[in-house]
Image (tube, rainbow, N blue to C red):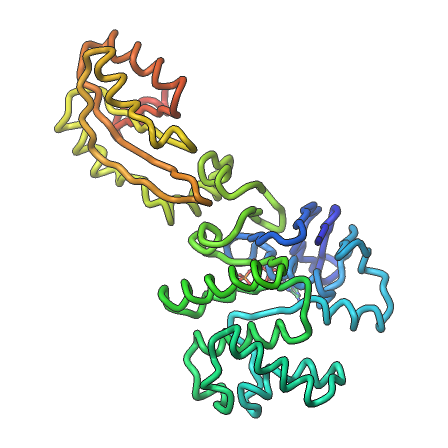
Length: 348
Ligand SMILES: Nc1ncnc2c1ncn2[C@@H]1O[C@H](COP(=O)(O)OP(=O)(O)OP(=O)(O)O)[C@@H](O)[C@H]1O
């Protein structure tokens, strides 16, 4: 378990201060995969580096595995760091050592005897699927293979926590998916808590159970990934989400839809179990309305479905209003306005 309690980190002094992390309170539960997302400069790396005291907090407490860490001794700090593995965007492998040498390195530092080291390296090579690369040097590996070595090295001392600093940002989409799957396997098979930072919402969607959104040093939103995706509260979060759900139509397309369709246009958002029910046909029959489906997307989030439909309701205004009122009891309904009427709406 990792707990940040009102943590602030300020760099510099005397008018040159940078408030990298501001009053952050977060709890990462044992065994979960927790993601922190934010744009460049939001304070993510600083927050991550506070967990293994690569940075020390200016104010506040950080508790790792029941222990407040900011006041621990050097010996305790060494012990703490051996319980926390870390992987990096740029892999940070030792170019002078081969794959086995890189993975064994933390064990060597911890003075683990050679036969035990060899055993562990073999086990980890199997785990990350690199048995055939044991004697290769980092420069002979692809980015994905380097990150597999990074993960094996981070796991060498059997940590409880793995922290990932933009671990897939330098990889292509297919390799990213492979590394994310490997991280899921790390979490499941070794029961390791994973704390990751990223600026990519698809990483959060793929593997995290909970997420915190950071902006300007602060956590502006946090919660279960499904809840945050289906009901984001801040503009920044909405922007991150639309980058993966891809369900914002361009103003030009919206205007065209409004020009070409005279009916009332609405966006219907289906969450949870509702997405599998025949709601539209039931309402259409009950009110004798026509639904013209103009756009639709459905996504899987944490084993649940999240659907988004843009529909034209064709019928008299009063019937449409009644139907929309009933729909609102079941799904989220938003009126979709063309750019001109959106402007009227804002000015009204
Ligand atoms: N050692 C340092 N000294 C001074 N300022 C720093 C230091 N480290 C980070 N900062 C500043 O703190 C703020 C937060 O930086 P941080 O690297 O934590 O953000 P980030 O969200 O991880 O961004 P990125 O994804 O670009 O790394 C930035 O304004 C940065 O310039």
